[in-house]
Length: 453
Image (cartoon, rainbow, N blue to C red; front, side, top):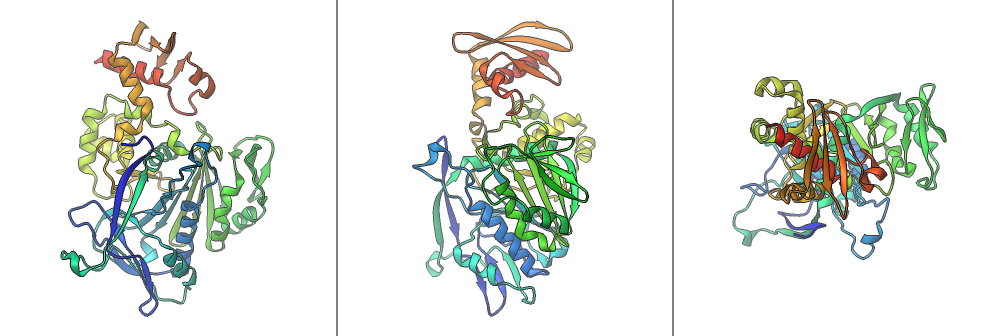
């Protein structure tokens, strides 16, 4: 397996298409189930133009690259097939920008569609140029039906056209999904402004790139404004141009809510419409992709996963809202153990996080996740340090512990408490806890938990 991508073949029964005669939008899907072409949903869009505009906005993010790392100049991975999930009462479309620094999701709530949900599942959706052109032509006066999945599955492949699209699945997407989930689960709501004020604010944003200077978003009456100085409740944004994705979607928005993660500096921007939501989560800096954050590492290293993970995994039933308190009560788990299990399930592509609901939701990515831990090199390196006896306990009390962890020609000192950790290595000196724990802290934390058993 490549360190950057996993070969993956998508098989679509046909191309996605819009049928003008019947006003039907058919999204071809690819899924890793016994029935490789399941039909999750078929129904009619209540606000077809609004839905089409949100899906086009999502595709603008997926097809964008706000930052081009030097290492990718010769090899740009293109992954433009958003993830779609059909749960009990809503459809969700989600994806990442090419640089993995912007996460986008469209939630079609129960009142957004009229129809029957004939299945539950998650798949990748083929949005080809013809589909995007058709979405641009949809008007609210049209009667548009939405079908997620083809009409039927023909077993005799000699009588059907199968569109095969062989691509390399970016590991950045899978790693990014769990990091975005970890960031969102910590975010606090900061601002909530009317849709009209959101439109004025977004229209006022500068048209040039702003990634070379710090910019803060602060309150201004019922609206927001830019500032070059930090203030109470100010939200820092690197690369204001990334917010302009929202500008064309505010005409029908009732409100815009802004969230902030104090640990990483990431922010989230949610437009609430009559029967749908559009979510945009942006990394602290344009050059900083979510895939390298490491915010979920301590949860993935937790010793409680052995007991809690199988229980919670077995109990997932495609809920659009997973209530943490219910999990704690149902499985008689400590709250932190249940949280760690949800983070680990996110690393496997099995849950996401909804900021508006302040809760997780169930989905299952149609990818081979058998080697999930290989996507976390820091965690792998921490386990290797323990395996070769390079983690040494120096002192320990009930509240804290001190370890020495071997580095390159030097031992790094790690001090741990239940809620904090510090290391003397250069990586920690540079990033602190803003990019997750270093491998030495992870190794010491694992060793501490194992010695407590």
